[in-house]
Image 1 (tube, helix red, strand yellow):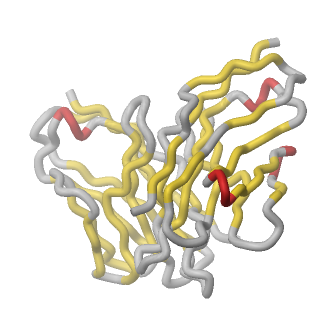
Image 2 (cartoon, rainbow over the protein chains, first blue to last red):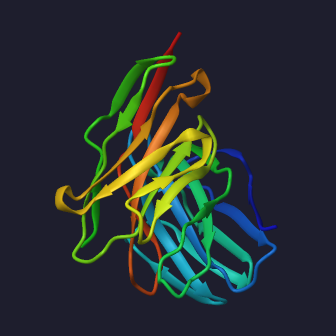
Length: 115
Length: 114
């Protein structure tokens, strides 16, 4: 069966410090990978998605970047965190089906607090 | 462009009562629709999905949803709510593009009182 792991679960970082959140998927190959952010009281905002190794698409301009060094690994990074980067970050994967859109499977999330 | 509206930010129901969470979508073609549930501090779990066929879909945990094209709605229902159903519920519509991503509503928080 497929599983998705995301870490760290909780992170408290000072403003201006770097960030690295990691996500790995097991039990599937060539998944589509996604990073979403969930701010308090708001829905989920798609930050990045990747359809293959080294292929990253950004949905919104921001202080963050993403990389996909391996087929089932997706990393969210920042060189200098801002207060506004605080939130709950969710990694997800899906497999592109013949119907076009399949469901997303989410990790447990990473709570980032920037002080 | 796709969008999802969940008009109810917070709903409170008594345990054993019926539940309906509203979801309206905007999409130019036949949508792919989903309902997810999120417990505090956790990721999202898929409750059910609609791709095509029967407009009444059954999901896990006793939930069901009905797709109504004429009303652009995909409301989630449960005949008898349990205390463990207290959570945040998200409706989403699938994008038929290369990203294969979902557009989410802002969520409805469900409180269950004994």
